[in-house]
Structure formats: C-alpha cells, structure tokens
Amino acid sequence: MASVLVRGGTVVNADLEQRADVLCVDGRIAAVGPDLQAPAGCQVVDAGGAYVLPGGIDPHTHMQMPFMGTVTADDFFSGTAAGLAGGTTTIIDFVIPNPQEPLMDAFQKWRGWAEKSASDYSFHVAVTWWDASVHRDMGLLVREHGVNSFKHFMAYKNAIMADDELLVRSFQRALELGAMPTVHAENGELVYLLQQQTLAQGIRGPQGHPLSRPPAVEGEAAQRAIAIAEVIGVPLYVVHVSCEESLNAIARARARGQRVYGEVLAGHLVVDDSVYANPDFAQAAGHVMSPPFRPRGHQQMLWRGLRGGTLHTTATDHCSFCADQKAAGRDDFTKIPNGCGGVEERMAVLWDAGVNTGQLTPSEFVQVTSANAAKLFNIYPRKGLIAAGADADLVVWDPARSKTFSARTQHSLGDFNVFEGRTVRGGPATVLSHGKVVCQDGELRAERGAGRYVPRPAYAPAFRALELARQNGEQA
Figure: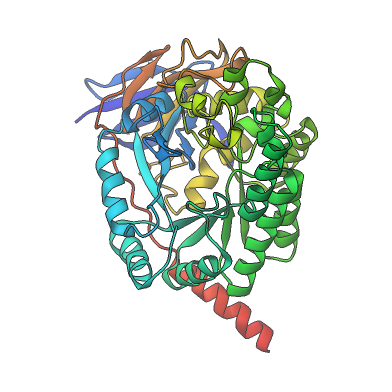
C-alpha cells in the first residue's frame, strides 16, 4: 500500500485555511488533520512554511490539435507534463470534429491521442455541424462516455463556425441530456468582414489581428449566445472572456438570475495588445490568439469580474505553435495559426498577479484555479478539494519561490513563451498526482501514460428540475 504524508503545511481549500497534515494512500486522500502519524514505509513530504493546495484544473487546453493546416507543438504527454511542472494536475481538452465527421469518431481519435497523458484529463466535445447522427452521438457521449459539456465556435467562418441554427439545436439537445453548452464568443461574420477590410488597407502583419477582432464582436456574440441559452433554459459557459463588453453581458444575465459562467485566461489578465506592435514578426505573431490581447483597461475589468464572481474559472487555452508554424502568416495575418501556451505558468501568474497584490486571497485562488472548475464540470469533490476521499492531487506551494519565465527553460515543446521575462513570486515546490510525487524542486518526474481519463456525469436532474420550476413559475 503506497502512502505519502504531506506534513506541516497550511491546507487551503476554497472555503477554509487550516494548519494540517495530509495523508495519501493508494492515490486518494485518506485523512486531513493535525499531527497525523506516518504509516510504516510512508514517504514524508515536508510542507513546513508552505501552503498545500488542490492540484490545479485547467478547463481549456488544446493538446495535439490539428488547426489551420498544422498541429500544435505539444502532444498530450508534453503538454500535461508541462502542466504538472506548474501545479496543474488535470486538464479538460477539446475534441473538435471536422465538419461532417461523426462526433464519436472524433472522440475516439482524441481518446487515443490522450492515452500518453502524464496527468488526468477529460474532454469537452465541439459541435461543428448538425444532422441526426450528431443528435444521437451527443446522447452517447453523455450517457456512456462521461462528457457533460459541448463547445461551439461562433468564429472561424468557412471552417468550424456554428451559426444560430446549430446553436439552437445543440443547446436544446444539451438541455435534454443534462449537459452544459460552452461558447467561443466572437461574431464570425464580422471577423471575416473586418479581416478582408484590414487586408485591403494594406495591413498584413500581426497588428491586423486585433483590428479584425475588436471587443464589440466578442460582446455581440456573448450576448447572442446568452439570449439563446436564456430562451432555451440551459446554463451556459463562456470561454476566454477577454473584454469588458462580454464581461458585462455575463454580469447582466447573472443579475437576472440566469446561469451563465465565465472563464478568463491568465494571459488576458496580464498581457496587453501592445505586443502586436512589436516590429519583430516572430514576437508579434507569437501572441496571435483569439480573442486577441486587449488594451490594458480591460485587464482591470477582468480582475474585478474574477473577484466579484462574474468570472469563475481561469484557464490558458494552451495551444502551442512554433515560430516556423506561425511563419505561415508572414504576409497575411489571417493565416497565422491562432494560439499561445501557458499551462505551465497559469497558477504562478495568478498567484503573483492576484494573491501577491491583494486582489485574491489564497482561498479565492483555489476557487478560480481548481474548485470552481471541478464544481461546474461535475467532478467535485473528487477534484478541487483537499478532503478524505478526494484524489491525492496536491501542490505544496512555496509563496517565496521565485521564477522568471522563458521559452528556453519551459517544459512545453513550443519555442515561445507568452510570459517571457516575467518574474513571479510563489510557485510549486512539490506536486503530487494520485499521491505520487511528479515534480519536486523543479525536477519533473512525469510518466507517459500515467494520467487517467476523468468521466464527468450529466447534471440532468438538477438542470431539468430548475428549468421546469422556472417555466411553472412563469406560467403561474
């Protein structure tokens, strides 16, 4: 019986800080409390002077994803290993079927790719087209494979963009199944128009990227998705909220009592749009992602949304490309593969920019880096909590540890770091996945294939009962 005792730290959950030891046995937490005794043969991890946090959950990554004519640099092993190095012990990635590709075929393909994962993983599945088989496969995915969320790209016209008819059909089906729709909120028609206009003006470099995707196109799409979800009566999760316009749309909906949840990327909280003006193409193109980085004023609003509960989770949209891949758009910014890394850096960036500045408490940090994602995607209390019975995914967090981020030292296989040169205070001293030390004092011990698929049950009884109550209340 394998056991590890994490001794002498301050255990931080979303609702409580306490001085306690954590005993892990056979991959689960067996006990949490003061002065626990180590069983014979138990490995002891000294957490004195440090916090002990639930392993991070990144609810938005893209490992080994085919996109824009290439494939992301990180596969499921290198990407999850990088996550472990930064304290993230679970990812939720995306199955993205090509138009007309059966959802089940795409799901099985992604499951095969993910077998090499070093950390635990789960999947959202994108709905990129519609017919009777998609309706059927959504049911199979929920009932038999533990998928309880479906992604909809409102951008990327002539590729994977979901129009309003697809949104309506898929949202309705999600409600029937007890699954939650998620949306990438950008008006794809407007983006396409603005891209053509920007190119026609002779702007062909990376600086054209934010010009073609202004905040208004994100705000409009967020509001439209929220309105559709409200009429149908299904909860909605808006990914990578980057601007005040979409933040306000979520806030208005929540003020009406609508169940709408927002995700923000670590990058959007600390990086601004000045990066696109860099005359070095590789540097500017390295920051090309959608939605783009915004003017600095939006960052303040995003932090307010995170503190105030309008935004609920933090993610990375980890989608790593190398310079030679980004160079495909050297003469046309619309051909630059969209995506940045960050799965290794997210938690330290959030701690340094959030906790160290007083914008987040340690418990709020746990909320937005693990607990809320676990609750929203129905894997709590197995994940996102330090308590008896939970998975022994733990991070011994040293608030004094300092690190400067660089592509030269990152574990990601990408050759660019969106946080290049940023020095942070606070980081993981020891990371445990299923009760096994996988990173200690910067030494990564990730194992190919050690990660497990995490099924996520449907929320049908609660969601459908709430919707029936709402309908009955209106009728009354």
